[in-house]
Length: 197
Image: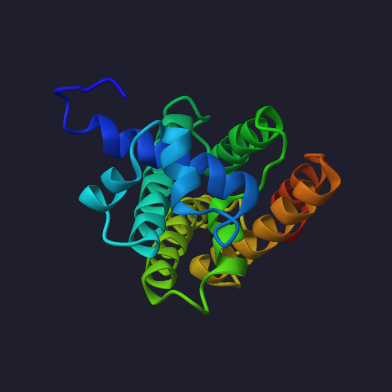
């Protein structure tokens, strides 16, 4: 392996490899040797940067959460000014991402199904990520309620939780069916039907 003076190079390569493998084959089916082989680094390098596979997975989830937060912020920059239209726009971007990546699913949803009972560290990160997602959406829903665009007989956070629960279920079905149709359906049914005043 060529040496590099950049101290972030090996952790970045490990993280990129880990994300790709976890997304493709899951946590339990992915070994440290596979991760280091894909990253092109010696196996010992893994333990120079991460205490365990569990700690590594928790970091991958944090990286994924940052990517998702950045994607959310980027989508809002060119979203329409009306809050309900902005929500449509953001999730339209996410649908396009799922289509471009072949409906691989959501790393958070995949890990929630696979590792939360076995890893408190991963469960805690997943809980933080889901709370952040809910809060971001709840802020827009509250704005839409104040503008009279979304029903206000249900709390904004409850609507955000309901949306994310439905969305993650649709992402799972999208993965099974290799189609983004379930994502379009959820966005349409919730935003154009159930959430309206």
